[in-house]
Image (tube, rainbow, N blue to C red):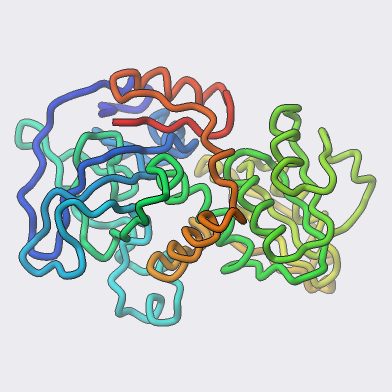
Length: 343
């Protein structure tokens, strides 16, 4: 639990509410450490504290509410971030991440009678969590929990950016700025989509090596090496003002620029309007790849099991729950790609 902005996370016994009829209780097996968890804990994203963070989560159902069907104790599951109603105009048109309900569920956690927030509606840095059943998707037995956890955010964001948001076309070229777990998931998605040239820019030699292994055709340490080259599809997976503004200028006429990175709330970006308007470029926002959990996750599972999505490469560190602080440090210091907390 994180008590306040900048406070270290600590392990604390807290109260978890009894199940409502439409809820599921999950015994957590693995939760990935996302950079947004670090940002929230540091006060850079939201002022909501105390909070149990962690949202890339997989586990085993250990109890279900009276109205829950299709799920039961012992089922291995992944937690979806959409947490949508399923019936509003956004949900009905296949954009559940835009649902007014998404991420706004009442927390089911408390301490000494006072509410404790569930980070991003999940709260996966815990031994158990309670969440609505429509946010829980069964996990095939041969998909490891650590891989499934990363699929819950990083992978769904990157693949969804390619397929659900930008719509990368076969035979086109793609530029990816940032080669963390999300950026590399964009790379894997672009390869699946049939992009002929996948260019990745990242200052880290280790991450550039991972990018090449996962399908990048060119890897660069700096955007200067592009020398004015333009692309029909550009993905920014860093979350900095300078890379976002560069991404917009790197799109060709009619191109799609997808902004994925999560900058601090005070960050604003700018671009030349007179140059942009006749270019007919599109700037697209991307929240968790606009994941459609019950449609997309089974597809990702099948691709992984068929050897076409080498997601194991993203999990570079695993840390037991009682060493959570070390796992957070790994992520904050950009050690490896994804650190997963195991229970």
